[in-house]
Image 1 (cartoon, rainbow, N blue to C red):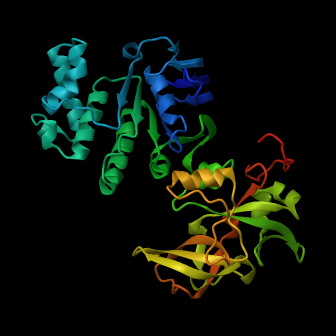
Image 2: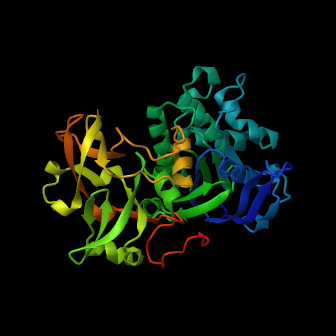
Image 3: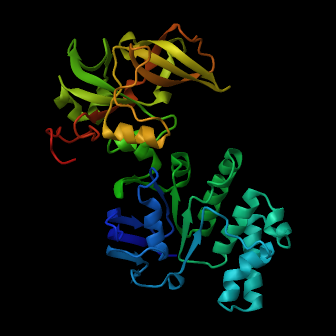
Length: 412
């Protein structure tokens, strides 16, 4: 095992395209680090630089104590699992797993020991004589994992290894890969576009955008205290609702005005975000996660000044919960470059103006309990957990926590 350290690592292609810019990241010995971000953010390029498949333009990359910038891939003591299984169709499972060891001319006894040990770990003992075509997608991915395990490398590199699997199998394989990494204790860098994978698998998660590292933290910290609007909007499913709001004071208490309605903030919210007091009278971007919204009759303890009223546009019954899309009159969806990029990454068309429903306000999504009694086209009263609201500077898109607000045009 070994730590992997990016020290101001950059990758610039011959045509001037900058894929990675000044990446500094320490992946601890035995840590499971996930690189996540939208397509084209540089996460796969960063992984390929560790593997030796991409040259490093500047900076230093260390695996263990060695700077490996100019060390050939075969001599870096790493094993990579790709998005495609890349199995040899004419070889058995046993021979696919053993292939790299045979190339290294290991003894037959050592090869057999390693292959059978990996097969036991991965539950492949009964499939060792089969060819890849006789295996399911999940079994093929296990074979690809086995080929990496037998090398007993200093680090595993995984490039979206589950993306070719169906949804149910992906959930199962997520758990298996996480268990495997814990059992082996091998340093692992895992690249994915799926933020659910990132949140459920990583010891820490590094969020990238346009070649830059935005935030690296444990999954819960990313969820609770995103450093900026982009991280807040990228982490969470369904995505965070992001609307314009104004910080005001009502009856001596700080609140946020949402259209013609206001939400009073409790002292707990303000104590964890003291910088918010300096935004009184200013427009901010308010982030509300769908899971912090509930149909008011199911949260009767929520006071009236912590509720929003709207009109139901769509209800999606999922059995254990309801996804409710509702309009809040007079509100405007936040429209920043971050929001546009997040919408594009999610496959939505890029809006040139705030999204509105029937011209009356922004559309919010709430994750309601299954017993919520809501009907499309009818009014709805929604309880808001104000303790879990997120606040972002409208000019810089930075999260509002402890620092003083930045002036317009200041560096983020």
